Length: 248
Image (cartoon, rainbow, N blue to C red; front, side, top):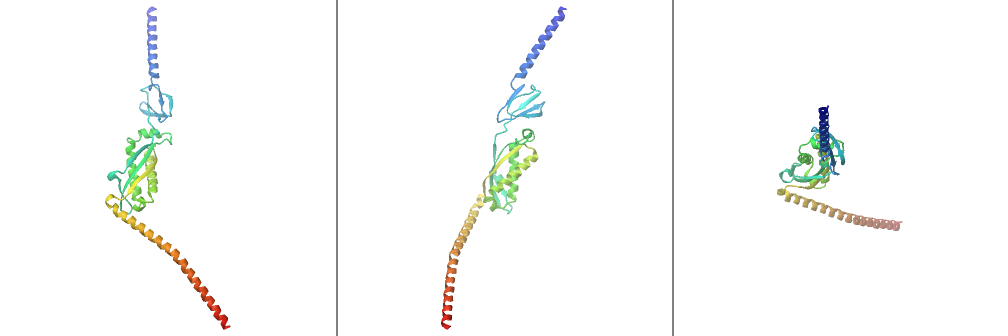
């Protein structure tokens, strides 16, 4: 009887120690609970496989290594500049070359439930992917537009079309990336021919100025001529009336 009681006490002591270890293991930060910051999302993995996404705040999970958590920043706006160097030279529809320099602002797409999951697991290099797809989209838009349109009144339209194509492509990839804005910072002919294009612009401005001057001259001369014609007509009618009166 004594030996049996001793074995029971030993088992109880071992169980108590095990319970304490499990409790310490569970309450350790990052083991049984975690906290998500205001600019983060909590992505819980169960045995390495995606399980769920949690919002900012205090959350519980199964102890590690059963469940682990990733805390990516999802509200940060990222910016990348594209087009510096040879990558910025693009061919237009009218077979001219234009130097393009533009910036893309993007962040994790929180517009649908699995956006954070797609961002973490569907794209290996998000920034590189955005850069490559943005350059491809810009080349597509430039290739369907004329040079004069791109470097003058079409800058906003080029940016808008590029953003739409970029977002559609990333959505097809299920990349979990939202494109906030595409800013066309610079669009001009290559440096070695820019003087010729400036000459063309100056000639166009002079032509417009000459046309405006001609229109202003016409607007001044035509009313004067009409006034003189009306005066001559009145004088002729008066002379006619006087001659007829004298004849009668």
